[in-house]
Image (cartoon, rainbow, N blue to C red; front, side, top):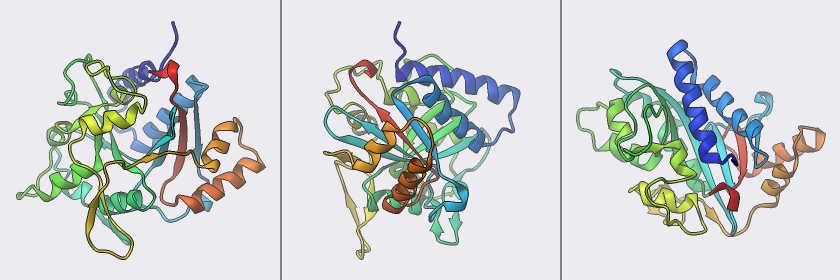
Length: 268
C-alpha cells in the first residue's frame, strides 16, 4: 500500500506520543527537528533545509516555512511550533514580547509581508482537537491558525488561555493532508482545508499603513518561485544549495528553515 503524507502524519503523531510519555521534558525544537526530518526521510516528495544559525536573518516568530507545490501554483505556510500541557496559563506565552515586538504580532506581520499563511503547530499530551472527533485518540500533533490565536488573546478579558482553549480552534496535523470528513476538496488541496476549518482570515499590516486587511487568498501563489523549485530539486546540501538557501533567506526572511512538499495526485 502506498504511503501518503496523511499516513506519515499519523505515524509521526504516534511516535511523538510515545516520546512525550517517555521524556516529558523534551524540548519543542527537538520535536520539530525530528518531525521535519522524518517527513523528508520518509517521502521522496519532501525536502527540508535548516538554515545555518550563523547565517540566520532576522527572526520573526517562525520556526519554518512550509511550501506545498500544487497542480496549479503553490501554498506557503509560516509555522511556529509550541509545546503545551494542561494546567498552564499560556496567555503571556502567546503574547510574549521580544526586543523587536510581540511574538504573535511578528508572526502575523512577517507572514503578511511575504504572503504566508501563519500557523501554530502544537505538541500536547491531552485530548484531541475539538474540530475533529473522527480520528483516533490520542492526537498530540495539531495545527491552528495564528489569526484565531491572536483573536482569542485579545478577546480574553481575564488574560487566561488554557490548552483546552487552543485545542478548541485546532485540527489534527494529518487533516492538512487528508480530511476524513470533507473529501470533496478541489485541486488546491490544503488551501481549501485551511479556509474550511479556520474561521478567522489572516490579517497583517500593509507596509506603511497601520491598519489590518483581510486576505482570502493568503498563502496561495499562482506560480512557484524559481528559488523554491530549485530547492526541491536538490537532494543533498552542497555549495550550490548553500547559495540557494542564502538567496531564499534574503527573499523570505524570518524563519529558521524551509520545507518544500510536492502535493500531487498520489498524496491526496
